[in-house]
Amino acid sequence: MLIELRTFRLAAGVDEATFLRADAQVQAWLSSRASFVRRTTARGGYDDRWLALTFWDDTAHADASEVREHGAAAAFDALVDPGSVRIERFESLGS
Image (cartoon, rainbow, N blue to C red; front, top):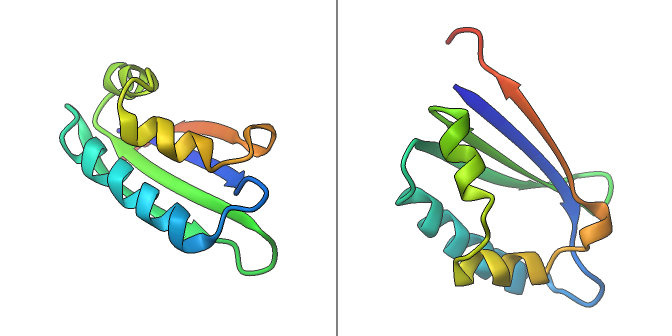
C-alpha cells in the first residue's frame, strides 16, 4: 500500500469554506479511481498548513492520479499556494 502525505497552505484570499467545497469534489473524484483506498484532509492546529493523506493499493494508480485532468482537481489546485505544496510518499510495510 502507498501512503501519500501532501501538505500545503491555502492561496491568499481563499476562505476555508470555499476550499472545503473543492476538497469534497476531489474526494468524490478520487473515490472512483482505481486502487484508491481512502483520503482525509486536516487543518493544522498551530499554523495555516493543511494535510491531505491519501492511501492507494499501488503506486502506478497513484501516479496516474497525478495527471490533474479532472475539473475538481484543477479547482482544488487553484485554491492552494503552489509554493507551499510538499508531497511525500511512503510504502506501508504491514497493517
